[in-house]
Amino acid sequence: MTAWRIELGRHDWDALRCGCRQSGAHPPETFTRLLSAGSVVEMTGHTLENHLEVQSMLFEVAPHAVPVMLTALAEDLHHSVRRHLVGMLEYLVTGESHRSEVEAGRPDLEEECIAAVREGILGLCAEAVSGDAEAAFGILEFVDEDEDRLEYYRSALAEGLGKG
Image (cartoon, rainbow, N blue to C red):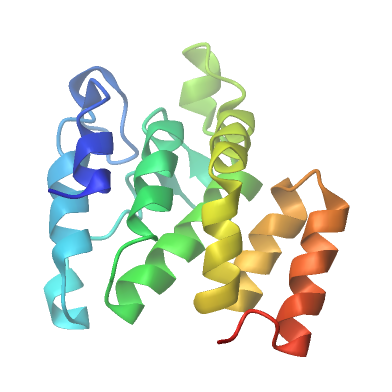
């Protein structure tokens, strides 16, 4: 059992709209295959692109996926999976609601994604220290309202305080 699997179960994915124009019923399986992948080959056909967002235009499944991704980043993941998750998080916090979502009454999906990232911000700080620092700091610069914390983490990492 993993925390991300439990997080997947918290949502009624069937009731959500997906970027591929189907219901959100299939993202849990996509997440399961993606997060279990041990190689780039195993990731093939199991990414979040065109489901959570299409060209940075967000769909209803996006904010529900954020806690799954943040929880998964705490796990031991293949580096390509980790890179995909961090890249996708960046799309989700810098994107905007797709026109169809605005028409369906969900004009602020990017704000929902930002709020979800803020709830798990320390996980993203951990990613900055032990994973792709540049990408994680790029997201943190956009979402973290505590500028002192962000600067402290940057300085600590530059000085090697997080090692050992």
